[in-house]
Image (cartoon, rainbow, N blue to C red; front, side, top):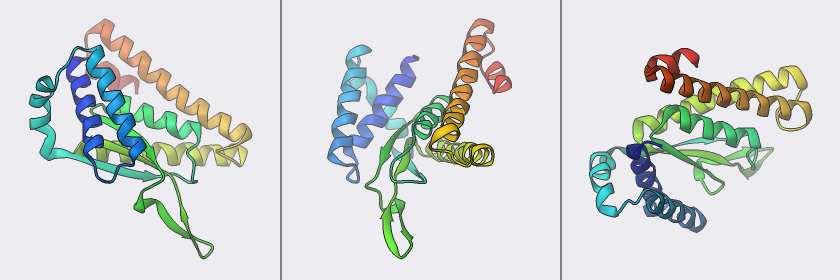
Length: 189
């Protein structure tokens, strides 16, 4: 992993740890992950200051509501795929977000949310990409199997996401071997 990308990821994690809207568990997980990355790459807080100063005014988050209170495995895998595709962003799953509440049959229900955070423009791009892909996968699974979360429909949706991830990995390998990063990656995707 590129050192600048690691620094960005650690900065994102520390941003979550400082966020007043984050739950105690999210804060603990963010601190633990940041500490582990800093130890693994021998980073200190001074190493992050140059990255953090340039991005601190541009940090943001974008929330995408899931269809149910609990995200399906394919929805979480899709979030990982989008983070790898976009770069510069991180994600977490939350059920404690005001934006995810909605009225269903006269009752206020809490739904889950995939929250992307990092550089503001990239977080928004990640959200839009995630929503577009999730809608496509959901629609195709519903059309073929009548479900996107259970049985054959859930398996189809998970396979779709795994196929996307496999294509991205292949494109990255091809780009590394050819030295034409951006062109090879965008062509393969």
